[in-house]
Length: 260
Image (cartoon, rainbow, N blue to C red; front, side, top):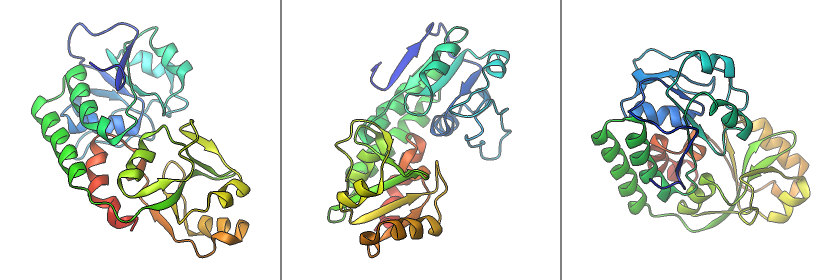
């Protein structure tokens, strides 16, 4: 198993897990897609609930998990993500439960991640292969529009944007959008008005998660940076940009139209 995509922290598993706590939304959704909803005994407040199924208890957020509740749930596997969860929380949890840390950085990582997660967590192999193959097929069939320089925002007060070493930037690249801050080594970081203006974007992306951007925020940015007044902006479902795993398939099918 590639440690680039999934890394066990703490003890490894002697048998497929029966009780899983997931600490990030796209991981939770992917567990559901692999037929493991009934084994998810805990999730964060940001995580989705299974369609037509019973929601597992919430155990804090991605950045502030309730460690006491997680311990009390007696998980035999905790799923975390290197970009979503804090190192100190993962280290605290690995003292009492195995932790599987995901780290896909490119769209090409997602299909192997799905297969590896299914193998590690005891997911349905057919569901995993069908999902992974569909992601690979959609990615191969993608025909991006002419390239444009983009800035994608993820937070406000101050403005935060995406760096180069992360899954959303690679997804943007496949869609014909070159992240203006791709040279930055960090996944996410604050950026000031001068840097945004100097980036000379040709399109502005305002996803609705993790921060729920609205038209008022677009207007505020244009007021702050008058040179962006005529630059097109897109408000859209942010999970399509930032969630890897099962949501990648929906992203490949729908983002080209939403960001055109």
